[in-house]
Image 1 (cartoon, rainbow, N blue to C red):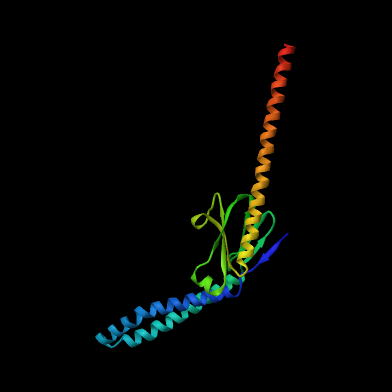
Image 2: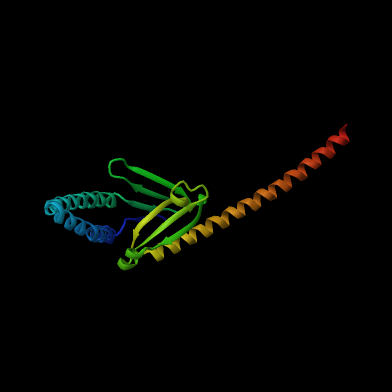
Length: 190
């Protein structure tokens, strides 16, 4: 069974809200700075205008590339692996086999909770990403259902892996018995 997911449109809205919050924080410090400059040498208004124009251009640039990034994100969940397709200029296909996965972590920050979104972090034994996360499925609207399905797959994968290990141990016992029989036969022949 294969499930294809894309980030919900609310994920881009999260980026917009983040930029707006950041703009408010920058304005809290930038406006008094311009007023101080204005009081000293009358160039504060010009600095304020250039600063506002520069900030708007920077935010538009960031939001444009965020939209491109989100449009190129695709998550494919299969029975034996998870594939993450991402990238704007360089396309990346990330394959995470289920047998390497150790845990799925549901992560929801303040904006995620406000918008009803969630992110699922894929943790592997040799995690190469930030804090041991091999991949992150961002902007998922049905996060609880996806998280439950991934956890169920993890449990079934671990159970089948333990069964294989038990069979391998049983094989070792049988091979040791065969070896001892062959040694007994070799002694009797010699």
